[in-house]
Length: 384
Ligand SMILES: *Cc1c(COP(=O)(O)O)cnc(C)c1O
Image (cartoon, rainbow, N blue to C red; front, side, top):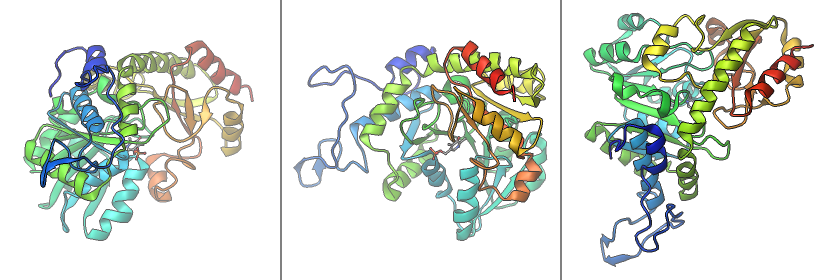
């Protein structure tokens, strides 16, 4: 189903959720079942087995498609299961261009698992779309981008990359996790497949793990649905229910993440302890103009470098009260992460160094608490 309203707050509340036909229950029930009784052999009513399909998951997929404004959405057990499903479209000998500071787990999946099947990955800087042109080979099938990237919040021009990829006969996949569908819809700029780790903003409450793919192409959707069913990394009915519940407040939460992060980032810019504050919503961000072009909001992720050594960083982290030191992001509660030793520890050290993921770098996921408390926390922790 396509968006039935132009307005995200309405889509979030209504899309995918129909009152239960038997009882009128306004919320989609959790169909906690593995199998379905058939009317006669080979004639199920609608569903036959929950790996193949489940009504709670169907409601979620309708809702997710409406959020991205795509024809199809396919949900998975985790963001990486969704990444894996796309990679399983490839054949031995195929080549993929990946943005250089891609999510650590995505890079690990490509480097450690899919490269065993003779699929080749090149990790390149895509902040200037034209840079990618010389890297295409006759076997390049996918261009994999994230924007903003993680953790350096570099932006990639989706429209330019998708145009170049298309000319070369490759599909463009955009991991849209950092923006959520509320702030950026890559298919509007020519991307073929959109991916989210629903663990993050879409789930938003740090209580489940999930992923999804959204796209318009029917053939490709058919292949990916087959992979969802045949490879089996589906999400459970309860997770689907939690996501349906979360989506109702997604628009509201994203507005608050955006507002809080903008206030916090501006405040951090004035603090001596930080040598650099990276946030697409700041005019000092080198790609602020692109951010304004392809994002409707700047989301809640800020990266910053601290003056001092790793001991200073550890001391700073230990003094934060509201920002909990944890991996993950996009939840209602504020988190802080040290990419070098946490989320990006699996990135080869040499590659990390080249990217600038050094021990002074911190990544903040700004929650929906009162911004005054968050700013005070960041200031107090700086009194080392
Ligand atoms: C977390 C994350 C993933 C992986 O998702 P999981 O749900 O943890 O498997 C992929 N991409 C980005 C940008 C992420 O932040």
